[in-house]
Length: 475
Image (cartoon, rainbow, N blue to C red):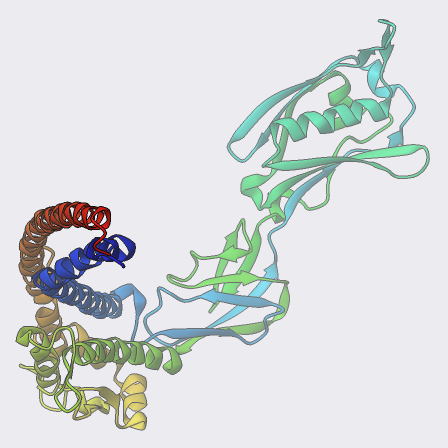
């Protein structure tokens, strides 16, 4: 016969009962956690709204940067890129065409020594050498020995090749960024030193002075050699070119100071005149307008996605109860439909006049692409003024959106602060619930422990009765 105590001991039911009772008692905690989750979801949604608003404002700042020429960008071209290439026209504000003729390019200064016998000892005979070299604003004095110690400790005289190589190594060590030096084997017996500046023009020409000994023999020559000669005459190292009748000379073939705002590179001389031009780039201007529209629509979509109400399916956005957020898209659209104040008759005054309108859901779109292109091509200054003027609807849009994203006093910051306070209060209530449930669980365990003790005592008494009855032969 199975006793009541055995049933409890075999199935251990009180632990399951304790957990079920605690679970039932946790309903308040679960409700608080759900509220906390909802608040955190709202805070995340507010962060997403703040992000797209900041992106919109950054786009407006970018479009209004004068140096960007957002609504009148220029694209550059050359009539012959084998002669001249235009790299940028960032500082030019109007379409322009320039005629250029290139007489000569800027060259790197190259000095060549005489061709001499490599294994001869002509240079060493002149004794140890010294020379002062100046390249640009750098000056160094180099010294070359004519003898070297061999492996046995004996002093051995260097031949012409070894002295030239030592000189080239000294130049590389002291002028690694300004010049290069190489010793070429002209044939099986003769060698020649070449020293070349690494930058073009007379500003970086090679200058040798105070040469003595073996280096004087290389630089100035001896009775049997003419010394170093130049591939390009010193007076012809600079580029020479003419733009619209004005003649220029520059040390570089990359020019950025002849025409303000225009940067171009000369590729080769040409007797014929070529053209460099900067023309309006409507595609880039349209792209800038499209990016403004996209940034606006991202605000509109983000807010609508987070404030929707679907009563039929009982679905709601995280911010559906925040009227100040929900109304922003409506206010922005109403502002965008307004005209700019204080404009002269016939001057661009609204988005609609450049072919931009709104859908019923607040989405901004280009309604007349041809009209927008025409405005950008023929009246870009008015478009730029419309976006930058303090009296324009664009400026009012920016004021509205900035009121939401100010770091401490903005609408979103205030809403987040309120949510944080509610989350903190819920944290405290949840912590209190956890403490209560711990005590509640302990009390339930104690009650079941007492119940088990009663059952154990009853089981013991039952066993004693059964034993007695057995001894009495009652069963």
